[in-house]
Amino acid sequence: MKSNQESEVTIKPKKKGTPTTTKKIIKKIITILEEKKCEDISILDLENVNSYLCIFIICSVNSAVQARAVSRELERSLKEYKLGPGNQEKKAHNSDNGWILLDLGEIVVHIMTPEKRKYYDLEKLWGDATPIKA
Image (cartoon, rainbow, N blue to C red):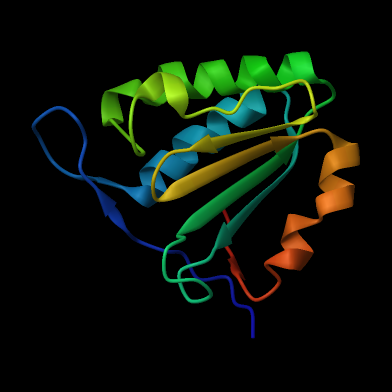
């Protein structure tokens, strides 16, 4: 059964100081997505569905060019948190196919054209996930 509860997972920032919660980083991501004119933004909590996935953020863009711009801005703005596996440069899987996946470790951002989003329908695929209100 779905509910609108919010996940509260802690992520340690690159710089010393207080831990930053996933909620704060999600809000920062959502702000960037809105500033870059992304549409239909969805947040899914996958922790209770899959042991190795936490949060999916899914949004629609009008073109591959917009998708790359959004991806670059997210990488630039979130660099200080040292999120995700491996090198910063290898996180985004840039292509012109209409779908960019940005792996930030506990948070995975899917930037998709409406055609790809409709075709893959991640919200339906992960239908047991809990939607999160930003």
